Image (cartoon, rainbow, N blue to C red):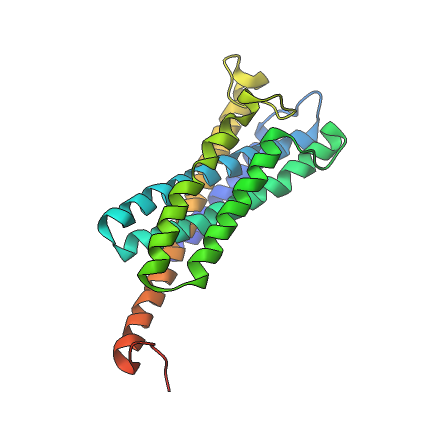
Length: 225
């Protein structure tokens, strides 16, 4: 039954909120504001995953010319951009009380903003053109755009940055309950990604089927009288 999926997701997200605010300890220096960390990091990692799916699906499209791969790429790009938007919103909320500024042109922040604009452009490209030309151009662009993802990830290791390193050999200053909470948040956001992806793919598939029906019913342009 389809209603079980949103119900299960809702219960999982409520459990995640409980784990973040009740199970995870309050950080000594930053206090309660540090709780944003679990939303911020999970959103960033799922955004990276979504953009990798765009990269893989774009390669698959160029090899197979399958419309299904094109739909997978655009659906994942839209969801990845949504998660990256959450990163750009939660980041300043966390930075203001810790760094005493909403935004700084730090290497990690700047590269993340550039990545967000690149995938926003990808979405615009996907929705502004039509046909196989659009799909080919979008696939090539989706492959090129992914080059910015490792740049964002390694930026705090390659350049001096205010942004902390989450994964480090010393544990990044996280206690075991904090690590467990982060992993639970990551799993929750991953399930949310899969949930959004399947529904977006369903919408795009239905739109594709309707377009074909209009094409064969009303001619090449697919316009109803």
